Image 1 (cartoon, rainbow, N blue to C red):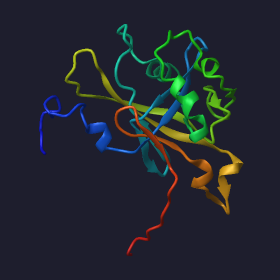
Image 2 (cartoon, helix red, strand yellow):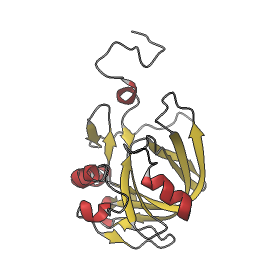
Image 3 (cartoon, rainbow, N blue to C red):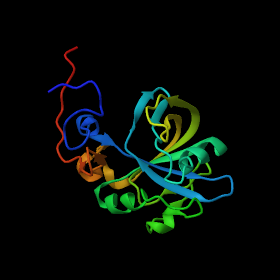
Length: 203
């Protein structure tokens, strides 16, 4: 099949997210100018450079009442955030933090998670997360949108501090079997890393 209009694909749901998969999930913690912690997952996420380490994620879609994402507003106010990465055992708390709640609600408390102090940024990290990346805000890119109620954005941050749980380190490397990072597929489907294979570059 072929289509060039994403609104006319003829399938039950637009397959785009299912095709670009799996996608790692940025579980972003931030804090408002008033000191209210926020935690939300974003599946449009990835690393985009390593010298210095740099990540990007896309906080798209306004809230149902027309306000922008709390995460984006917090980052632009404070110029910092933390990307936490969830292992399989944190899949349910992570999903809880995707709920649309009032900006005054602390998602750490909502999901029964522990906010831990960061070293270089004020935003707390998720203590239970196997990996947390402290980030300084670099820039925000506004992308085209074909829906009047949706604003598309990309946030880019430089990693200034990295926390790794000792139990996922083995022989000086990350043990993916212990880490089992959760990733997003299409629709309401998720996966986690279970199979790893090595391929060396021909040069």
